[in-house]
Image 1 (cartoon, chains in turn cyan, green):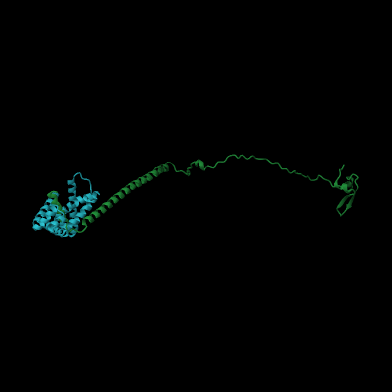
Image 2: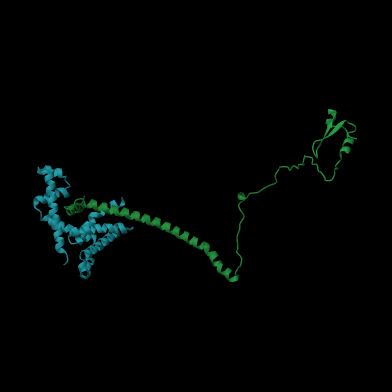
Length: 170
Length: 167
């Protein structure tokens, strides 16, 4: 039960963090998230503050990412030791930075949407209208609205991840 | 709900879009299974640890018990070499002892009820025909010779045949 509570509270947060740390590599982020959660189960301990716990989680996530990359590129282990490892150590993103960066990327890409799409996103996520209300207002079906929202989300995701990849240090 | 929360909600849904179906639940299930396995392993390890301590204590106790007699052996060897074999005995428990007591049966002494007649040799004498006839006290009788060495005394009165007092 405690683990479920933890999972619900930190799954999205950790995934966001890892997406930024991996430079938008979604597949890698998911694999590292899995490794991180396994390490949480293995090494979980008591913390007196939530910030310390999150800090510990990010350390676990970064070390899991380092191990994963080392495993993937075992033929270049020597080279990686002096390049990628320092890269990971150097990009010890804190939670605020990660969320700030992702929010900035999202806002930037929201602006790139068409006015209709921006309106739809606003109705759903900022005005908190239900899909049925939106469908009624636009005189269309709920399925059509869901489909449209899904396409927008997908496009936004691709754009955010692409920007993260572009910002990745070479 | 604040604008910040709305954006975070949107961000979460955007990033979760087109993720592998059931990834979140599958990952939860896998880590929960791992957690249960680790808990089971931890419990097993604790049980084994406790058992190990008990076994260790038992071994130590067992080793210490005969150590005292082993230590005393060299001293005995140094002092004297015995040419006898020491046998230690201990009394049997009381319930294993078998005891006897004097019987209440009375002994009865018996005496022979049969009268013994002893004979001694040489206590008789052979008499001749005349002496035999003299013993008849005048009773009428005839001595008939039936063979070279056999004779038969026949009384004339059948009552005399049964016996009569002799003087």
